[in-house]
Length: 290
Image (cartoon, rainbow, N blue to C red; front, side, top):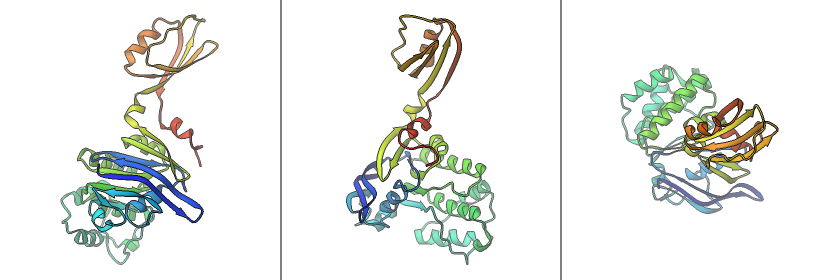
């Protein structure tokens, strides 16, 4: 396992920032940490990078303790903080070259590919760039080294929708190359789009871990009948079946043809089938807009 935390905990006096977090991320896996502000997302990331000392528990990256051996742990990581502090006396390309020398790698031809992708002139001084442009430069620096683990804290902040999609595509490609990706967000749609697994935090605690492949196979179904039916015998993969007059509501998992064959035997007036989605899972623990 590339990244593993065990009972990772951080207190600030009587305030619980993170409590007993157990989390694993394997090579090639994209994991999203989801939750509102103050749920512990950034605290977890800072503990992984050795910026904070845990109150208790353990975290390791590729076998290196994130606090006791943080320098070696960080050798495997590229990191994007939520709040950027860049050297504004440099141009974008000077910053990338400077940070590349610190990591002892040479920017590859991907630098030009990423520059075209993010549509930015990195020869401009950072002091003359908008916050969105600075974030693009920082993202290029994070994506270039192709480290085993990429950690990003709210990476899509200040990005327009088009650039956001480009970034999510890049994260998906990183996973296909075998890189592990861990990123925090409070935007359900982007987490749902790219993640293999989602960890939902609430007040510093991991309250739910969701396999996204399994969730994508769950459908929410609404059926309106023309007349009442007795003795319904739904397929095995139907769950949470409820009736409201002539309406049936249930969840279905598995091959869709099995469901359609069963529905063909019913006097159906109207039918709606839609993916379950992450929203319903999230709303079990948080109200949208929190």
